[in-house]
Length: 106
Image (cartoon, rainbow, N blue to C red; front, side, top):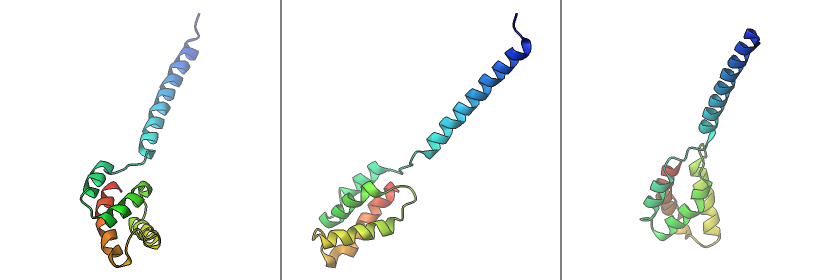
């Protein structure tokens, strides 16, 4: 014969387990990085001039939620100027154009 108290505790334990599993799944879903719209950012980048596209391509993989996009674009642009991939005279304009598309992926 089953102990009625034990049976109730087991049913209550299952309910708590399901509740914990559901809240854990919600927490994991909320913890996943929320990329705004990488596809739209890439579509935007197709119309960028060559140097702006170079900056975009170098920066997009590093764009994550909460990143300081301005600092990231500036740092990548400086690196690309140093490597000779972007001309110093057009670097600022190219970085600003790339930034418009990268903002979509924030």
